[in-house]
Image 1: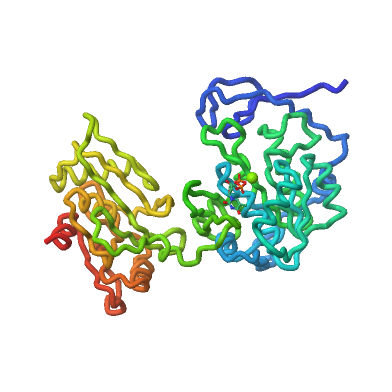
Image 2: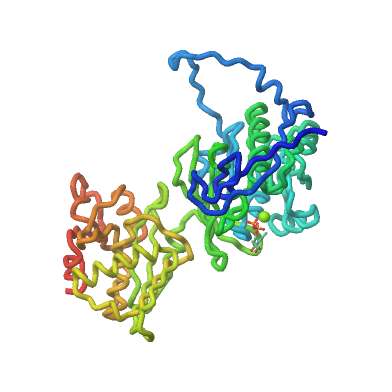
Length: 458
Ligand code: TYD
Ligand code: MG
């Protein structure tokens, strides 16, 4: 009988150790090590032509002598996805799509599989039956244009057998956690199994120049092997996020070997699948006729894309001793910092007030340029003063109440102007080198919060 070999793996980051450890030396998480059988078998059938990969000998090559090739891009037929990928699919690239359950990963991928023109696509599902996928396909599109094949299989060896017969142009795996390779004895979803299956698919992609999409699960507490260990192996990592109760979904690129990271695609989830949103600002700004306090608009930049986003605040007397602070789509710690700045620098008494914050559309904003709009929304609600819907803001706020410059200000100003805003508040420091005559929109440079308030409220 063959001797079984096992090792301990951190279920959080994939760190491998020979013995059990209480604390992972790599990610510092406690009690994350689990024993996994990893019996390596060299004599069994090679998974994906393993022999060819090892028999090739590479020689060192001078950079000047390496021929430069511009990788060809294939459009996915989905402008948002193309943008996030950096201009389309690259042959042989492996793309990992992560996201919480139910956010729409399978929907996005099936929609892609059904709409790429002129390609043979193999969609491997280890989670849903053919019937379930068929039902979803019917929901998404009435007349599929592509040749899309569905395979419900979880063994990589069987999958590769089918691939050799079908020779698809694109492979989609839903999800990587359900696959298992017989080269390894560990259970599907365990770190070593996920790693093995990914490296087999990676070899397949590189040797046949077939792009591969992998769907990966993330859990909030990270109990199962999240895609963290995969992120290093694959070429591109995309994250699909959003609030499940809202229609908007954001596809964010976190890592991209073939394009800029921090790119962004926006979708809306309808009953008939995902729709691309090409004019996000117009949707994220609510059409209001009434004069409501507590609303301010921020000219933010997500990836390379300017977006005008509505921030809403509600400040009310605290019903209990400790005031409540909660925010949706914005970091609560940062909100607390902004409140402290208001309290200390401007003398607003907010410590006895509940403060609620909301970013319209259920999207998350990380751009610091939203700071000023949030401050203004809070004060607008606190003082019950209406801010004109023709004004927007783009600046970061520092700890001493100074208004700081933000990047790519020209783009933000142009977008605001395009959408019909009449005035934009920016940092004084952003005025350097700015060609002000170019814009019809009124620029209000400010350097302290007090300046903003005196300009706004007189
Ligand atoms: P799904 O793609 O299964 O999510 P994931 O693969 O990330 O777990 O999508 C889940 C949700 O999307 C589900 O709650 C139903 C909703 N949905 C729609 O609203 N419209 C549709 O056309 C489809 C197919 C799904
Ligand atoms: Mg799914």
